[in-house]
Length: 313
Image (tube, rainbow, N blue to C red; front, side, top):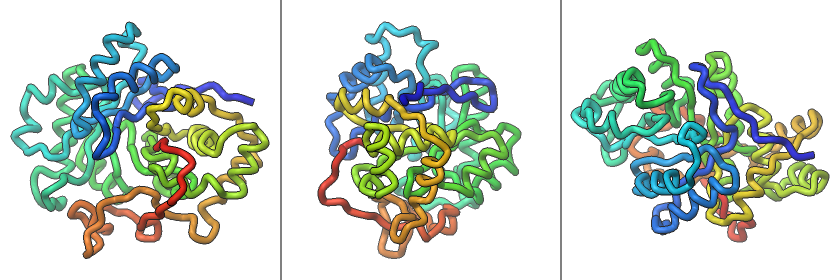
């Protein structure tokens, strides 16, 4: 049985579509196809687009939105704080005015090694987002890649609860402790790379294959449906129209199927990250240690799948 893509209500009352279309095309991606990809996604029924200044294609995403003819209030657009910004940039009114509908701040800034004691840090960035929220130019503000540890730091220094925390999440990395923490504080989790960023290790898992066959669905549909059923918003990327459509066709998972899927990551070798984070030889991720990020070492690493059955992410 097919399930309708739900809307989730954020902690400030704003409604967020339960599946988003990612606009990142990769480091070597052809930004020229962004506009077409976004237009096709909107035609397929997506009402949630996820972009960022770092993708270098926000203007093209905006062009697609305008050309779609869809009422702007029907669309939910997520952008992120440019992590290379300085404190001067953060206080610049031009940045505030150009911020899209939902802004996120990440706990790292590429090219610079920042700790919580240095400035600008993520609390400084968050306070600027609070100011943006007060202008009415955004509907909500959230964070990305925040662990329980860093959420604790942030929440001790703000009166505005993040609406969303976007993190890597999928059947191999369910983020159970973080989800419980966020649920208790009414922070919605959103999942990037829900299909393994081109490395879908769980696609061949016996439980996943069995559920997919039972519903005449794909493993990707199973993974996305599992996330949505858990109350997590997957951000999935595909430039192929048929896959765009398929990724929106969620399936209605039975309780026993959910329990079987919940156990996938407990199998030997399955509990892990599937994202190729830029680790340095000393084990740091973009200048941060796992301890500073608050990330668990037991999901570190990268699995390379030579024969990928999907280019979705």
